[in-house]
Image (tube, rainbow, N blue to C red):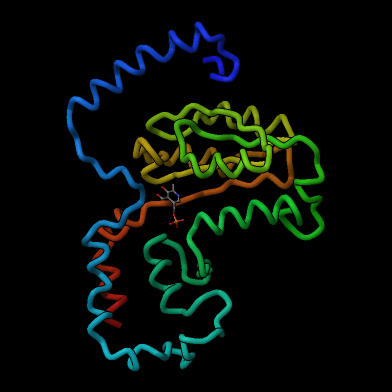
Length: 240
Ligand SMILES: Cc1ncc(COP(=O)(O)O)c(C=O)c1O
Protein backbone atom coordinates (compact mmCIF):
# COMPACT_ATOMS: atom_id res chain seq x y z
CA UNK A 1 0.00 0.00 0.00
CA UNK A 2 1.18 3.52 -0.82
CA UNK A 3 2.03 5.87 2.04
CA UNK A 4 -0.75 8.39 2.78
CA UNK A 5 1.86 11.11 2.36
CA UNK A 6 2.34 10.23 -1.31
CA UNK A 7 -1.35 9.89 -2.27
CA UNK A 8 -2.96 12.44 -4.58
CA UNK A 9 -6.02 14.29 -3.29
CA UNK A 10 -8.22 12.05 -5.39
CA UNK A 11 -6.61 8.87 -4.07
CA UNK A 12 -6.91 10.20 -0.53
CA UNK A 13 -10.64 10.85 -1.02
CA UNK A 14 -11.11 7.35 -2.45
CA UNK A 15 -9.34 5.96 0.63
CA UNK A 16 -11.34 8.13 3.04
CA UNK A 17 -14.87 7.29 1.90
CA UNK A 18 -14.92 3.54 2.70
CA UNK A 19 -13.08 4.24 5.96
CA UNK A 20 -15.75 6.74 6.98
CA UNK A 21 -18.46 4.19 6.16
CA UNK A 22 -16.65 1.58 8.29
CA UNK A 23 -16.28 4.09 11.12
CA UNK A 24 -20.00 4.98 11.01
CA UNK A 25 -20.87 1.25 11.20
CA UNK A 26 -18.70 0.75 14.28
CA UNK A 27 -20.23 3.83 15.95
CA UNK A 28 -23.71 2.47 15.31
CA UNK A 29 -22.88 -0.51 17.54
CA UNK A 30 -22.78 1.95 20.47
CA UNK A 31 -19.98 -0.01 22.17
CA UNK A 32 -18.34 1.26 25.31
CA UNK A 33 -14.99 -0.53 25.26
CA UNK A 34 -11.91 0.13 27.37
CA UNK A 35 -9.19 -0.08 24.74
CA UNK A 36 -6.27 0.72 27.04
CA UNK A 37 -3.52 -1.87 26.78
CA UNK A 38 -1.71 -3.90 29.35
CA UNK A 39 -4.18 -3.24 32.13
CA UNK A 40 -3.72 -5.83 34.87
CA UNK A 41 -6.62 -8.15 35.47
CA UNK A 42 -8.39 -7.75 38.87
CA UNK A 43 -7.12 -11.23 39.89
CA UNK A 44 -3.58 -10.00 39.30
CA UNK A 45 -4.19 -6.81 41.28
CA UNK A 46 -5.77 -8.84 44.08
CA UNK A 47 -2.56 -10.82 44.53
CA UNK A 48 -1.00 -7.90 46.36
CA UNK A 49 -4.03 -6.97 48.50
CA UNK A 50 -2.78 -8.85 51.56
CA UNK A 51 0.32 -6.69 51.62
CA UNK A 52 -1.83 -3.65 52.35
CA UNK A 53 -3.13 -5.14 55.59
CA UNK A 54 0.36 -6.12 56.84
CA UNK A 55 2.30 -4.19 59.41
CA UNK A 56 4.65 -2.23 57.11
CA UNK A 57 7.49 -2.61 59.62
CA UNK A 58 7.36 -6.40 59.06
CA UNK A 59 8.20 -5.84 55.40
CA UNK A 60 11.23 -3.61 55.77
CA UNK A 61 13.95 -6.25 55.71
CA UNK A 62 14.69 -8.73 52.94
CA UNK A 63 15.71 -12.30 53.83
CA UNK A 64 19.33 -11.21 53.62
CA UNK A 65 18.61 -8.43 56.11
CA UNK A 66 18.75 -5.55 53.61
CA UNK A 67 16.52 -2.59 54.48
CA UNK A 68 14.47 -2.57 51.29
CA UNK A 69 13.44 1.06 51.73
CA UNK A 70 16.99 2.07 50.87
CA UNK A 71 19.50 1.57 48.04
CA UNK A 72 21.55 -1.57 48.23
CA UNK A 73 20.79 -4.46 45.89
CA UNK A 74 21.88 -3.30 42.45
CA UNK A 75 20.15 -6.12 40.54
CA UNK A 76 17.11 -6.19 42.86
CA UNK A 77 16.25 -7.97 46.12
CA UNK A 78 16.42 -11.76 45.95
CA UNK A 79 12.74 -12.23 46.81
CA UNK A 80 11.69 -10.13 43.80
CA UNK A 81 14.17 -11.89 41.51
CA UNK A 82 12.84 -15.25 42.67
CA UNK A 83 9.24 -14.16 42.09
CA UNK A 84 9.87 -12.93 38.56
CA UNK A 85 12.20 -15.83 37.79
CA UNK A 86 9.22 -18.12 38.40
CA UNK A 87 7.01 -16.04 36.12
CA UNK A 88 9.60 -15.89 33.36
CA UNK A 89 10.73 -19.49 33.78
CA UNK A 90 14.40 -18.60 34.35
CA UNK A 91 16.74 -18.97 37.33
CA UNK A 92 16.61 -15.96 39.64
CA UNK A 93 20.30 -15.29 38.90
CA UNK A 94 19.24 -14.32 35.35
CA UNK A 95 16.75 -11.68 36.54
CA UNK A 96 17.58 -8.00 36.94
CA UNK A 97 14.95 -5.87 38.63
CA UNK A 98 14.60 -2.51 36.89
CA UNK A 99 13.25 0.46 38.76
CA UNK A 100 11.06 1.33 35.78
CA UNK A 101 8.45 0.13 33.34
CA UNK A 102 9.67 -2.15 30.56
CA UNK A 103 9.11 0.57 27.95
CA UNK A 104 11.56 2.82 29.79
CA UNK A 105 14.07 -0.04 29.96
CA UNK A 106 13.70 -0.76 26.24
CA UNK A 107 14.03 2.92 25.36
CA UNK A 108 17.09 3.19 27.59
CA UNK A 109 18.69 0.08 26.02
CA UNK A 110 18.03 1.47 22.54
CA UNK A 111 19.59 4.83 23.39
CA UNK A 112 22.59 3.15 25.00
CA UNK A 113 23.09 1.11 21.81
CA UNK A 114 22.93 4.33 19.76
CA UNK A 115 25.29 6.31 21.98
CA UNK A 116 27.60 3.69 23.50
CA UNK A 117 27.21 0.53 21.40
CA UNK A 118 25.80 -2.78 22.58
CA UNK A 119 28.92 -4.21 24.22
CA UNK A 120 32.30 -2.93 25.34
CA UNK A 121 34.29 -1.77 22.34
CA UNK A 122 31.51 -2.05 19.73
CA UNK A 123 30.91 1.00 17.57
CA UNK A 124 27.81 2.92 18.70
CA UNK A 125 24.88 2.36 16.34
CA UNK A 126 24.59 6.13 16.08
CA UNK A 127 28.00 6.29 14.34
CA UNK A 128 27.25 3.64 11.76
CA UNK A 129 25.17 5.64 9.27
CA UNK A 130 21.77 4.47 8.12
CA UNK A 131 20.20 1.92 10.49
CA UNK A 132 17.39 -0.55 9.86
CA UNK A 133 15.22 -2.56 12.24
CA UNK A 134 12.92 -5.50 11.62
CA UNK A 135 9.35 -4.87 12.76
CA UNK A 136 6.84 -7.74 12.78
CA UNK A 137 3.47 -6.27 11.75
CA UNK A 138 0.95 -5.72 13.07
CA UNK A 139 3.01 -5.04 16.16
CA UNK A 140 3.39 -2.78 19.15
CA UNK A 141 3.25 0.88 18.12
CA UNK A 142 5.45 2.01 21.03
CA UNK A 143 8.33 -0.14 19.78
CA UNK A 144 7.96 1.41 16.35
CA UNK A 145 7.79 4.90 17.84
CA UNK A 146 11.30 4.41 19.27
CA UNK A 147 12.65 3.65 15.78
CA UNK A 148 10.72 6.59 14.34
CA UNK A 149 12.12 8.96 16.95
CA UNK A 150 15.72 8.11 16.05
CA UNK A 151 15.24 7.90 12.28
CA UNK A 152 15.79 4.12 12.17
CA UNK A 153 14.22 2.66 9.05
CA UNK A 154 11.55 0.08 9.87
CA UNK A 155 11.23 -3.03 7.73
CA UNK A 156 7.83 -4.75 7.94
CA UNK A 157 7.90 -8.49 8.59
CA UNK A 158 4.52 -10.22 8.24
CA UNK A 159 3.19 -11.97 11.36
CA UNK A 160 1.50 -15.35 11.39
CA UNK A 161 -0.03 -17.38 14.22
CA UNK A 162 3.40 -19.02 14.75
CA UNK A 163 5.32 -15.72 14.83
CA UNK A 164 7.15 -13.51 12.34
CA UNK A 165 8.06 -14.79 8.85
CA UNK A 166 11.43 -16.25 9.87
CA UNK A 167 12.65 -16.82 6.33
CA UNK A 168 12.35 -13.08 5.71
CA UNK A 169 13.92 -12.29 9.10
CA UNK A 170 16.84 -14.55 8.23
CA UNK A 171 17.28 -12.99 4.77
CA UNK A 172 17.41 -9.43 6.12
CA UNK A 173 19.40 -10.15 9.28
CA UNK A 174 21.99 -12.36 7.62
CA UNK A 175 22.61 -10.22 4.54
CA UNK A 176 22.66 -6.63 5.76
CA UNK A 177 24.86 -5.30 8.62
CA UNK A 178 22.77 -2.12 8.79
CA UNK A 179 19.91 -4.30 10.12
CA UNK A 180 20.56 -3.93 13.83
CA UNK A 181 17.75 -5.84 15.43
CA UNK A 182 14.13 -6.85 15.69
CA UNK A 183 11.22 -6.10 18.03
CA UNK A 184 9.50 -9.23 19.32
CA UNK A 185 6.47 -9.80 21.52
CA UNK A 186 6.83 -13.58 21.70
CA UNK A 187 3.96 -14.36 24.05
CA UNK A 188 0.41 -13.18 23.34
CA UNK A 189 1.82 -10.70 20.83
CA UNK A 190 0.26 -7.31 20.54
CA UNK A 191 -2.39 -6.99 19.02
CA UNK A 192 -3.38 -10.47 17.75
CA UNK A 193 -2.43 -12.46 20.82
CA UNK A 194 -0.27 -14.94 18.86
CA UNK A 195 2.48 -16.86 20.67
CA UNK A 196 5.66 -17.73 18.77
CA UNK A 197 6.02 -21.47 18.13
CA UNK A 198 9.02 -23.43 19.46
CA UNK A 199 10.25 -23.68 15.87
CA UNK A 200 10.17 -19.89 15.50
CA UNK A 201 12.11 -19.46 18.75
CA UNK A 202 14.67 -22.01 17.60
CA UNK A 203 15.01 -20.12 14.29
CA UNK A 204 15.78 -16.95 16.30
CA UNK A 205 18.43 -18.82 18.29
CA UNK A 206 19.99 -20.07 15.04
CA UNK A 207 20.21 -16.63 13.37
CA UNK A 208 23.65 -15.59 12.19
CA UNK A 209 23.19 -11.84 11.73
CA UNK A 210 25.54 -9.93 9.43
CA UNK A 211 25.81 -7.25 12.16
CA UNK A 212 27.78 -8.50 15.17
CA UNK A 213 25.89 -5.93 17.24
CA UNK A 214 22.45 -7.22 16.20
CA UNK A 215 19.96 -7.24 19.08
CA UNK A 216 16.67 -9.09 19.58
CA UNK A 217 14.29 -7.10 21.80
CA UNK A 218 12.29 -9.94 23.40
CA UNK A 219 9.39 -8.11 25.06
CA UNK A 220 7.56 -10.79 27.02
CA UNK A 221 4.50 -8.74 27.93
CA UNK A 222 2.44 -11.58 29.29
CA UNK A 223 2.11 -10.89 32.97
CA UNK A 224 -1.65 -11.22 33.29
CA UNK A 225 -1.68 -14.70 31.78
CA UNK A 226 1.60 -15.64 33.45
CA UNK A 227 0.07 -15.03 36.83
CA UNK A 228 -2.96 -17.13 36.07
CA UNK A 229 -0.92 -20.05 34.75
CA UNK A 230 1.43 -20.07 37.68
CA UNK A 231 -0.74 -18.90 40.55
CA UNK A 232 0.08 -21.87 42.79
CA UNK A 233 3.80 -21.58 42.28
CA UNK A 234 3.67 -17.84 42.94
CA UNK A 235 1.54 -18.16 46.04
CA UNK A 236 4.02 -20.72 47.39
CA UNK A 237 6.78 -18.20 46.92
CA UNK A 238 4.75 -15.55 48.72
CA UNK A 239 4.12 -17.98 51.56
CA UNK A 240 7.85 -18.72 52.11
C1 LIG B 1 4.05 -5.53 24.09
C2 LIG B 1 4.07 -4.59 25.26
N1 LIG B 1 5.24 -4.20 25.78
C3 LIG B 1 5.30 -3.32 26.83
C4 LIG B 1 4.15 -2.79 27.37
C5 LIG B 1 4.26 -1.78 28.48
O1 LIG B 1 4.79 -2.37 29.60
P1 LIG B 1 5.37 -1.46 30.79
O2 LIG B 1 4.21 -1.00 31.60
O3 LIG B 1 6.27 -2.41 31.55
O4 LIG B 1 6.14 -0.33 30.15
C6 LIG B 1 2.90 -3.18 26.87
C7 LIG B 1 1.66 -2.63 27.44
O5 LIG B 1 0.60 -2.92 27.04
C8 LIG B 1 2.86 -4.09 25.80
O6 LIG B 1 1.69 -4.46 25.26
